[in-house]
Length: 190
Image (tube, rainbow, N blue to C red):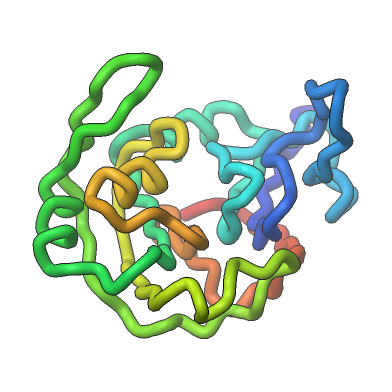
């Protein structure tokens, strides 16, 4: 009998690693398995770093994982940045910027970027900072790549460091109103 693969969407909270095994011996980090009783062989499709939040897809099907991680699938993020972002910075983000990747300079592919109103996400477990440190603004960024900490590096490269990063969409799959830390099982990812 062929075992049916299972697929999940998760609203990853701040402060969790996008993995099931902690490879670090010094500090205990929170892992995805603490949020839900996932079946054996479940893997995260791509990653969100410890400080990032939002939509994370998980599956027991490695073939689907490779398809979704490909450069054909858009990933959209809402990003809170330090300062009031300029149209020039948005233009540069849309057209690609130079970031460091694996010790070398890397030019990101063109994507989408726009200024948005505060999306009013619930406050995260660790406060970002208070208003005494100056204004912040929100942008929407859509990329097809997924280099290590790419969005954070891109906003820093245009002079507006990321304060909060929330992935809201992968392809046609939306975070919508899934609560922080919640998991929803899907029939498929189409």
